[in-house]
Length: 297
Image 1 (tube, rainbow, N blue to C red):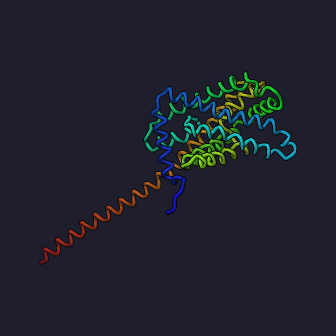
Image 2 (cartoon, rainbow, N blue to C red):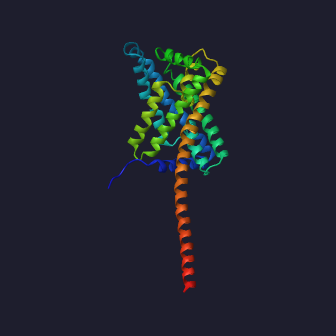
Image 3 (cartoon, rainbow, N blue to C red):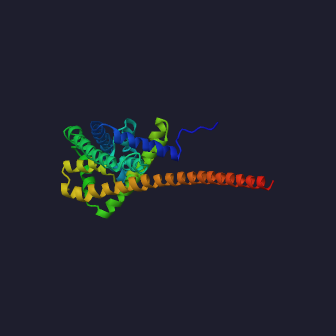
């Protein structure tokens, strides 16, 4: 007997839909706490990225910038691993999860809006708490090369054009939601971790954008003195990346995969109905023929 440790496409859709129901029906205080924790947990990965990124600058000078980016991509996924394993609420993951459960009519659009709003601002609160209490006042990034690297990263993101960072946001959450999809389809912890690591490593290494990750990395650079105002950060970084994340996760993963699942199930139901109709017609014709035969006798 052949066994597999991964759910198939349609079973994964159903599990994600159930997760959407659970997220929307939980108590509001639980929703806030889980969103707050997700911001903190993702910030652990962001802190590791800034620490390793700042400390490995000589590698970029000697081996090229690609190696430098790849190293950051390797260490950052620990944040999402912690979120998925502990069941915290990440806004970018909810863009996919709640779209699927809502399109399946198992949750409402109001449930979706509440979940998105609470998780977004809960993630923001968790990032701010972590930045000030566990990083800034703890003095972890106060010295070079970590401070200068963090400031440079924030200023670089702040100077990306609106349409470019918006498109990078689409690619970023497309990969993040694929990571959550793979983790959902996996049945054991090791497979979940690998499923998360691969897409997230790609997303960081190639330079895509993630709204909640930026809530830590970019805001951390601003706290340390980056030349980036709050208004410019909101208008030119946070808003375009968030909109891109919604399209990437909710559209290209959530909606597309829901449609593929819905279309296949509709075709199966249509075939079943056609067979039932054909069988019923056959029975009527057969009864009619038997009736004609009896009349002839």
